[in-house]
Image 1 (tube, rainbow, N blue to C red):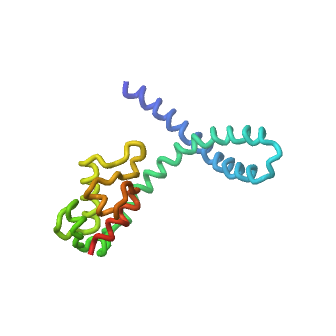
Image 2 (image 1 turned 30 degrees about the horizontal axis):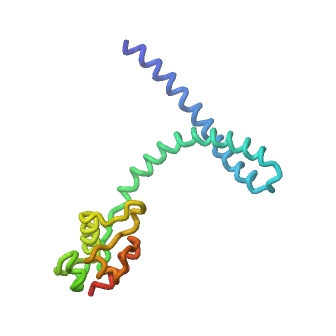
Image 3 (image 1 turned 60 degrees about the horizontal axis):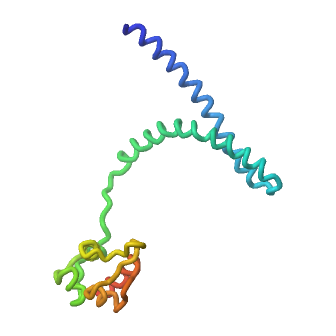
Length: 166
């Protein structure tokens, strides 16, 4: 039985080089497609017909890209020797104002931790808008931090919170 499997493996191995030859031709076809798109738009039907075969040809090219991606992924950890250091400005403990201290506490915290604590408070009190999760509905404590606004975006929130840190 073991001898029967080996010839099958040889047949599969013989098919793989043929597939690689076909893949080598396909990137050439891909490069030709953008040149057609750059031409004046006189025949939109012809463009659609040309786009469909190009899409079909692109799918097998992805199979060839996967082994190359695995090799590249294997090389990346070897190239990464220096560990990334956090920015000192973000890690510096900041003292919150009295209004912000009512939400996150009075102890000095880095900016990153302040943001985490504010989000923790928002999630616990369910202050995110149901329709648009990027908007935060302020309760009494957060309204003081947000300068009296009832609703702010999450991006505006970080700007308003930073005004309360010193």
